Length: 273
Length: 273
Image 1 (spheres, rainbow over the protein chains, first blue to last red):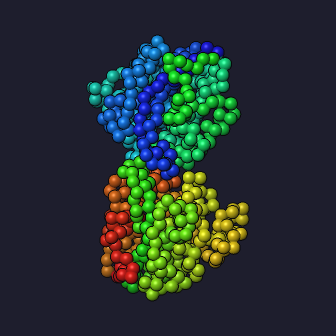
Image 2 (tube, chains in turn yellow, blue; image 1 turned 180 degrees about the horizontal axis):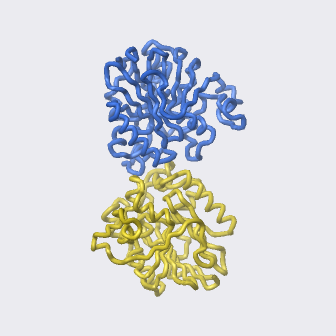
Image 3 (tube, chains in turn purple, cyan; image 1 turned 90 degrees about the horizontal axis):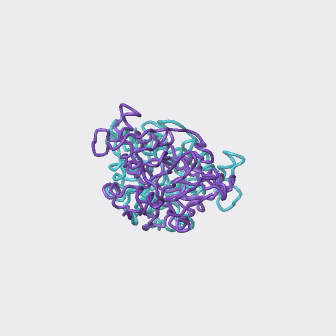
């Protein structure tokens, strides 16, 4: 734990409406927000929590989210800022499988992918209103094959996206997946959503909300985003994050917070113990 | 059944955003939509399904919904168009207890109020994000007293709204509450939501969706509104309405449809068998 380092990899920005960011509250109007991945350099290996969005996917499927992403804001580009290569990553942890959290998975050809068992299931049997969220399945072309012979998820037959064969490790419940590296169940935004807490020797634990809570303002208002599967569960998860932060004296890092992001330390700089 | 007549009582209009009317789809911008109540003249008595909104309540609590309501669009005013008085009503059926469906209940001092058991429960233990929806409890000042001694719902201690003591009849499941008068469970928008079907001798049955489906466009897009408790259940209820309409060869009447409403026959005219 004492050697653990954390780097935030800037992933570029997207646009949604204020009524999406703050469910039924708004105000209306474009909100441009950041996306980022979290690299954890741990004695057991290199972990990455979420991998941002793929620019070409967004331009093809959701161009109205107006992606802005430089080469340094892709997974290979951001990793190079700290002298790492995609193939160095040992574990990808996905909070959930919305396109803006798994778009860079496909670069991490040597990694074992870790996610909540229910989230993997959701990829192949999501609700109709979740279809844009789950629109980027490029990361797991053989998911359907490995997970469910009957399913067509992953487009296993499409040679263009059959770029690698990932290994998956699904988990359920709260888990300390490595010493000081915690996954906490925070469902509602999606079926099997995880938030992550990293314990460091020299500072307060870092608690990454992922999309259980987009921003500090969401938490202050106790207002979830308009993208959700189960709003009651999502609100409960938001309360859980508050409670966890208090219990562990952890610092909250929000997933899509235009205001807080400016205060975060971003790679090549990082959080060292 | 052969004597049954149906009158739609125009209740005035309200405004919401396009992102509220069509969850996560929009487009953005103000949508002004109608509200109405349904009077059923049945051999067993006078039934009214929903009672619209109270202008003063909306101006006080949700003025941003910009209510437009003439005296003839209140429950007393609309009933007078067909020669009825509020005290003539025997049964009020509430699809659910959002303010724009129960604002006129308080005028119906002689009626027995009928609703889903879970909806009555929702009034006293709703989710935080439902607080504006359930903001008009003026209809049942003694609801808390009768239903739950511990609850404070209904403001039983406020003399201003202690205008009458309603009788309640809670039901669950699909019910034929009078010959040819059906309530179908369509939850999701709220916990205990009902849609109503009326069978008439000389025409197709009329199926009133209430807020399980705001408009024909919502149905065509299979897109629920942004105001919901459980989107998965709401979408399933929308599909159920489609299936019921097909099974019974019923005509669908949507609750808040700016486009369809112009084609509806409104009091003083009505639908006669």
